[in-house]
Image (cartoon, rainbow, N blue to C red; front, top):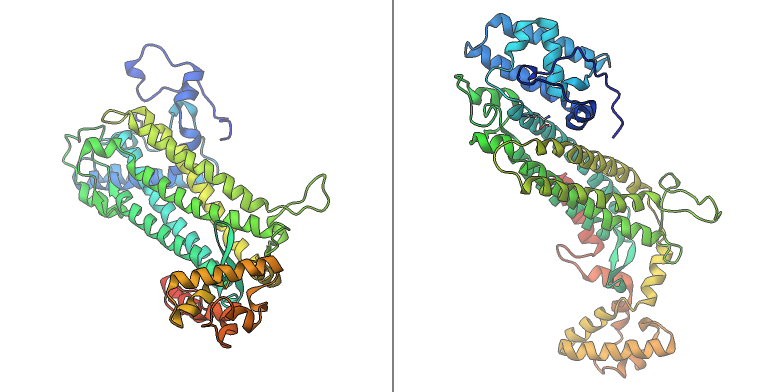
Length: 467
Ligand code: ARG
């Protein structure tokens, strides 16, 4: 967070100065203020205030002339903020009071009437929900862009064999395209999670006022319609105090980061000269100030690191909430920085990865070499024997002996002669060699969810319709 450089002028009176006999110290003012960070919700604050004012006018709680003045004042404020001319004032604590104060300076009493039947407690809850709704929509778009990058790259590699690993040991061949589609699926669930979270974000707290509702004859449904909320928060105490929707958001964000962190870990590993499966475009890497030979995968490493930061925000918000009695407590002001930082970190990460993925340069020779060293088609040989009538456990045993013998001689399964293979099981015929090839192994996994090139192509096609 940048240090606030906001004027604190002594002639400024706080909104509650009538109740107090001495002003707060500058330190306390700075400690309690949130305007340095919550002013980024100014658009939502103006939007929420206008909807509230329109409802007040419809219900004859304020005059049409007041509404007109408020609308005109808010238009001026919008222009001022957009032009960078608005003077944010530390004395006015937060975004809400800053805007209200400026409104009153611009239009007089009408500005003072805006807060009728409302409290900052329901106002801030409304602003966060509006902000989060916009942010979720933005994140959904970024997730989609990354999914598209994964599909496009997968499409170029539906036939490129990659060792699939379990326990970080070569297990069976997969295609590089199939591997990328695994991340596509993770992101698909991530988008579902955000969509689900959005439904609970999209409920209107306004009308709860400070905590108990208001004595004015308000019409909450019309405000909800005006602001695009799908439902009302049904209990005033709950409406102003719970931030579970923000926690859900951070939880969904933490899962996206988890997925990106796993992918990052793989990219880092694959790019290590020891493995050498891929190279990343230079613009995502840096060199070393001392070791001239280095090209480091900084972006994936940072994404892996920033995942910890997002987890921290999730735990921070959970902890913020757990000790609070009903209803609103000032603790809740601490919800914003973690929330904003979570969104910023996630959005930046998604944008960078959507650009990084198409820049992955695949090195098929290194992948093929690793496959050869790892007896990746051993399961295929066992399956072959099963199809010839051997029970799977016996087939497993026969192939294990064959692998051991290859290990001793330093050769691959496909390099054994027919007679040598028959010494492990007489069921081996001369059709065995095609199952020992990587291409044969891939093609044989020919069902939905399998890694055969034909299935990967079909999966890409299905996935495109889900974008
Ligand atoms: N700045 C406050 C927040 O972020 C707004 C609500 C303040 N309400 C209050 N009663 N102090 O939560």
